[in-house]
Image (tube, rainbow, N blue to C red; front, side):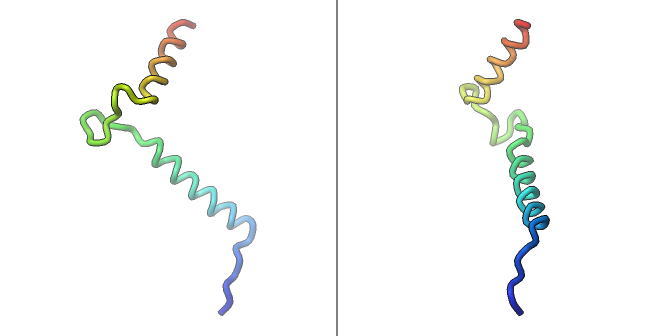
Length: 58
């Protein structure tokens, strides 16, 4: 049996679903006290602090 190529729609769906899974993995909430807890000097924490200041200054 020969290998069949995916049609364009199916290739796009495969790529989209893979990217969605990747996005959801990155967007998981970090719980306090978990082993993956964010460091206080991480770039994300710095960005959140700057955004909080900018939102308060509006």
